[in-house]
Image (tube, rainbow, N blue to C red; front, side, top):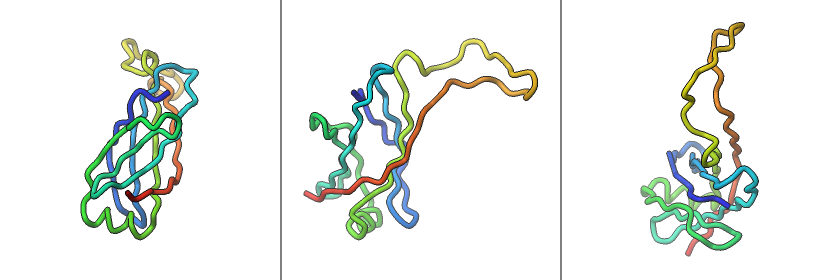
Length: 117
């Protein structure tokens, strides 16, 4: 289950694109089914599983117009797991490449419909 959904950035290109960070409570969590609702000028993300509110953001006029026109948005999500993702205390360089190892971070992109209230 998702502990929280942090909305990092929202942008308008051809459509509405929302960049977010989902913080999961453990590595065995697979229950993430976000739903988007617009109430007035607020974009609200809820969970389809239990209906809990995950995140809320105020939309500008242009973003609201695009959302009404398309009735969907692209959601980009990066997943973090509490206790696994964090800061590396010791960086182990990969000698052949000259780069440091990074913590794994999974992400996905999906298109979800917007429901207007």
